[in-house]
Image 1 (cartoon, rainbow, N blue to C red):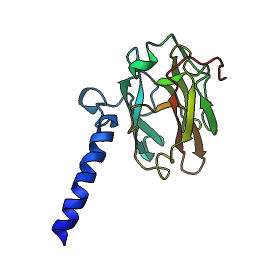
Image 2: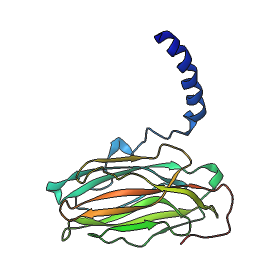
Image 3: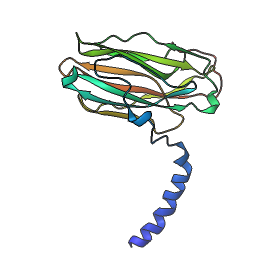
Image 4: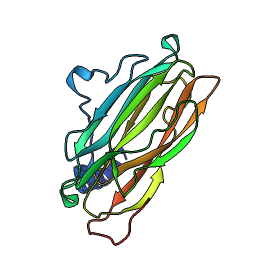
Length: 199
């Protein structure tokens, strides 16, 4: 009986793998020796190389270090159908100690993060570095689950499909735990120019 099931399901698994295997991103290279982009209680500025976007975010929390986190990011080239970025910019600052929601304006995609630690609130302010690709527009957007799953836990968020891009995030801040949970805004992008602009 087990051999019959194996003969039935093995071809199905092989076909599914062949159809969808090319769209898997990971594993990610988080840089040299998996180093963090910041030290505890220090600011940082991380930008992907030109033409690349953020596809993974890793972080560890340490209550003894000012309830701060170490951060690391992975980048991958955007799909060739998007072309080269036509402009890049820093979005507005999201203040420490508050909840916030932000997407890249002008249909941009997240290509970097900048952050400064504030000991008075044991939190960070954040800015997205965004890049626009011609006049491509987002569609089929959704929010990821919360990262980390609970305040104070390690965080490891990865994009598993090639044609999905991070456009922003919404965060909640716990005044008790002095930590944030993130939900990333993920979208697909049109392969043609569109006539409208998101704000």
